[in-house]
Amino acid sequence: MAVLAAILAIAGTRPPRSKSPANVDYAGSTLILGSVVALLIGFSLPAFSSRSELLIGVGAAGIALFTVFESRTRSPVLSPHVFRNSRFAVACVASFFFGAGCLLAVLFVPMLVTDV
Image 1 (spheres, rainbow, N blue to C red):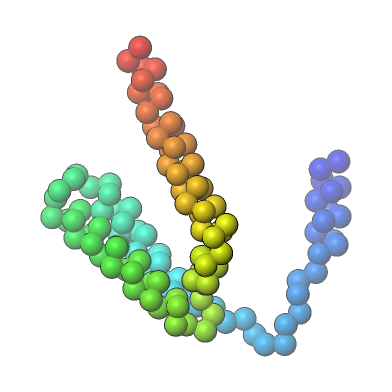
Image 2 (tube, rainbow, N blue to C red):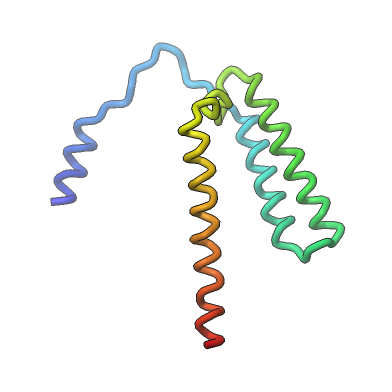
């Protein structure tokens, strides 16, 4: 039944036709990718080491540069005007804390169970 529903959904959808070719923001994509990778590596290194502080600083500066760059580009990866909608902004903050809670539960519950 699910396969039939998938086939009908795929057959019934058509990509939108646009007269202009799609513009891809390669610079913004590269900037956010490099920033997130620097932050992830920086947070995975031992705390207060010079390399971790450098990578966290580079990642934070890259995120700041990404937000400035995306507000001025013609076709942004993540348009800043969507955050003006308060419902969207609250949903982003709530999903961040929900994800952090799930990650902490996955990491710390096994440690708690092994100690009990």
